[in-house]
Length: 475
Image (cartoon, rainbow, N blue to C red; front, side):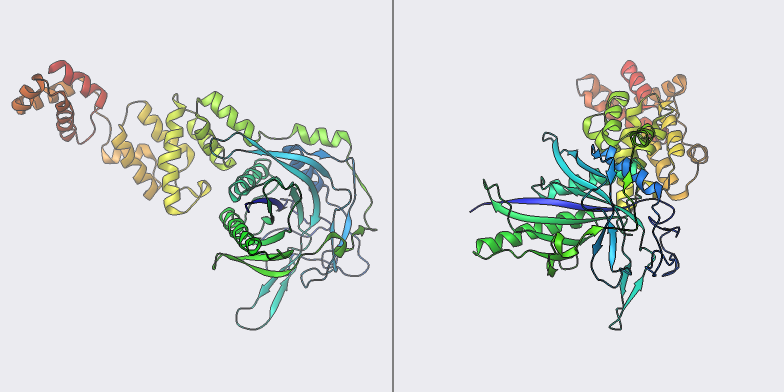
């Protein structure tokens, strides 16, 4: 029997507010344990939460960017469970009436047609603390700095059918949240986290199978690896005529496998009920319109603009708009150039190739966009040739010097003077009579030999176009 995977993703994104969702404590990452805390976020008796307005504004931005319907009235609920990093014994979340519902994202796998993935809901909630397990002693320490940091949870419809689709959806959502500047997207610090629900069903069956939830997925690659493993595991279980157990499983990246963690809870296990300390949240149309006016250009809009304005291919535009930082870097680099495609080629091949080799991203590039522009302008103005440009690029990479300074220090200015090059061409022709005779006899491929000789004389600084023209004329 053949099975079809059914996958739904739950993304928790920390919002970039300066203070927590229900108190005035800082959200700054990396502070001393339990220093960003107060009686409200540590759940002391007699305290009351006060909603952070910026959290709501950011949630509205996320909803608009993902084509969700924004509910005029939403409510906060208490989600009850007991864990050492949850000081109140419940989490303030939204359940029955979330802030936004019924949205979608479009993804595209290679050259396939665009595919729409539904978004069930977006709701606001507070984050829990963090347990730090001692590697030497059998103890765990609790850091409550993260307690109360505002989150939005974005729940997809079970529309995803492969690990590749899941990765594409997450990358698209990650890019959108960074474009609209509501989440820093740092997966290592837990700012963008994902849980995956996976089940299998016989192909053609409408009813869903029993699902397992995967946690501890802190990178796009780990999400894809974990989903592939879980699909294989459940296929093996069902193929052996055994039932799949509904449970929560952890992904172990060191062993490349999932492991059982606990039985999967149902909604009623959390005993949701309206939080009596928080009134219903009313979002009027003016608030939504005000947020909509300040919405930046989204990835799909930028992609289409890059295709139209810069005459880029769909693939090139997808690469360059994959992150807001890369898109901004390209635009700043290309701004002074007449030929924007040259900037795209250098950024995508030479620069990104270097960054990948070093294992760093565009924000860590040792070559700033303005300096890169200067280098490409010298190529465009025929001040240096392509070979010299590669030398300058390497020097910029290693020294962070200005490209104009490097060209002067290395004596890399291109030789384009017609009379000077004519003299060199005649010298090379006179020095190689046999090759001249062979060229005139029909061996026209020898042209590259003559060009090479002239390049030696000029130490690679001759303008190849001018040399080529003079050579053909003289020969």
